[in-house]
Length: 174
Ligand SMILES: Cc1cc2nc3c(=O)[nH]c(=O)nc-3n(C[C@H](O)[C@H](O)[C@H](O)COP(=O)(O)O)c2cc1C
Image 1 (cartoon, rainbow, N blue to C red):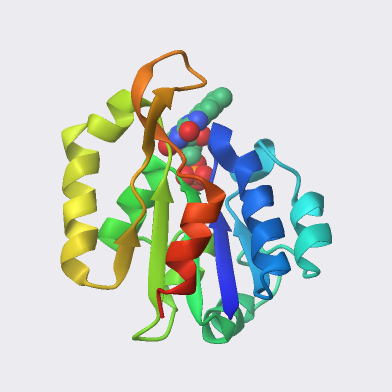
Image 2: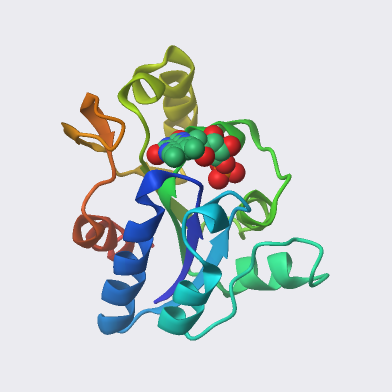
């Protein structure tokens, strides 16, 4: 399957490397789109080496890449998905390479979203409302975060789901 992976700026960004590795080993073809903030957590080079494709992170570096990549994808997954990108998806914002590519995704293509964030960000009513909005659209599948001791020290929901569990959802999401 052709999988478009969106990586956002969160502490769990490094776990997206594991997801690419698992997906490629399972026979999927993966292209990675990173937000600018994601590149502050993990270098694009890791994803380029593992996916065998250049990483897209600047909408304006290549005029039509966001449209071509959206057409190429059979399924999209955002892992980890920040509170910020979750909100952008719920509102239809397209102000970076990731959200622009996802907005251009052909009708009928599904988007798997694996949020990861601090517990208060996750439980924030606006995040919960954004999740409901995405759910109502019928195109998004949310892979709920796990409850654990998070990097910030809080204990509660907000940890990225296991990459193998995310991949299992992606594989059945078309
Ligand atoms: C060390 C650090 C860790 C962060 N971890 C997360 C996180 O796990 N989830 C999240 O939603 N935001 C997290 N943030 C905040 C985001 O990086 C910030 O909201 C940023 O604007 C997200 O950008 P993006 O959504 O364009 O990638 C973190 C910030 C810092 C400095």
